[in-house]
Length: 148
Image 1 (cartoon, rainbow, N blue to C red):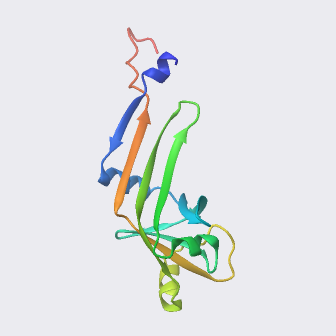
Image 2: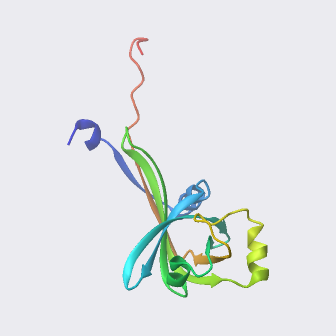
Image 3: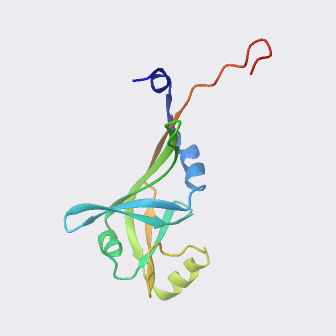
């Protein structure tokens, strides 16, 4: 391990910071079960209250895997060069919203399904567990004697 790697800092984020970071992202990854196996797909989303709302195709594998199941949803941002960044994971029970009047109301959020869909619904993932972490570089010391 290089000196720069050993000096990176790992900070566990509190729920408020996790929610703030969650609001800065527009695409994440949803983990669900497909045929008794774990599956992960990218997804657009919006946050409303204590729910992550994920538009998906009506009849999609993600919609089928979310009916009442506990799901995980993850967003992140990172710098590959510095090997720094953050991630937020949300875990909780889900429900499928497919009633046309509710879908129409949620469409006002302006979030479209990641994959094209002729008809869509929403997965509402209740945020029962919200956790995250940040890996950062230590602060750089100020230049000495006016050198920079």
